[in-house]
Length: 417
Image 1 (tube, one colour):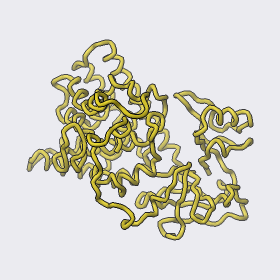
Image 2 (cartoon, rainbow, N blue to C red):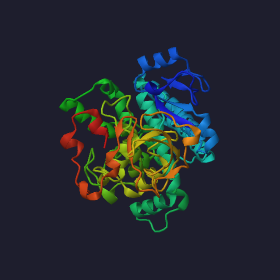
Image 3 (cartoon, rainbow, N blue to C red):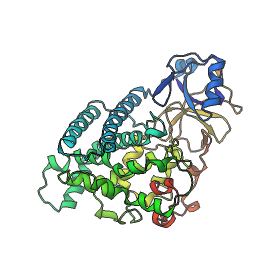
Image 4 (cartoon, helix red, strand yellow):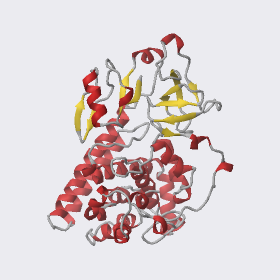
């Protein structure tokens, strides 16, 4: 069974279940038995790195969900979209405008990726970080595309109903209404207007008022960079991918039913990836915290609840093998996701209060947290999970979150929530 550990918790003799990759390079291959000097090197260079190791004792004790296929599909889509985004960047850096033939070629490539996603169904979606901060937009585009298409494929009937309502057409073609190509094109180009502002990703802290305004204009700037005959729905998605359901988004403050369903999909996936991108934003949050804030916390009014509900079933807050401290002091390891109650996975208690791995004779059957309300998740990878245990009376449910125009001082605050 896999166990996800921080580099500080690694010991000589542990075997890597998955290879260690940084900046698209494989540093240590899967199956490698770690030596002390390798662990010391990882600790010096990447103090916050987490790695997946194998545990033969737990392998004999129980079956766990194997998400390696899900990881591979996500990584493949990310790489393919990264290459497309690189070709767009190269075209624009040569001062050449995107023209009809360019769009046709990109659309053909997008269709191939869409077919790959359809032909390779996954149990859970994965956020992938393949590159460095220099390739953030490529990785971000890949993640947004992948998650948006997973959601789109899961709610095609909802999309058809919403597109019928938006167009006020009583006989909207099913083929047209369920077509996800405009969503896919919007995902590829949604941050086109940020290419000229990439230097801001390396600028921590507060942005100047001028920089903030440039960020708020990037949806329109990106749409304006595309040919006049570019898909109109995709252009509209690009212009509105930072608009919120409660009207607090930008650049126009469009809200609620006036937002196209594709805009609502990409808004959710864009926020999730941006909020968890620790290679760019100093204030990045864990997937668990971002998902909770979007679904039940102070940001929930920003997003279409139907889309968020699907997202919560696809993107799990804790990966298989995650080692989580429990309220009783021991540590549980995630064995299986819970699509209905994502924050209540199936776990096995595998470590004692001091973090020492339990012997085989000490292991007990897995605990389904959806059925056991007494066991609570307390901490994961340094993140305090007490927010998961709050009751509605402890929170300002439905409270209005100030818009980026009111509070946005850093790049993080302008892209998340």
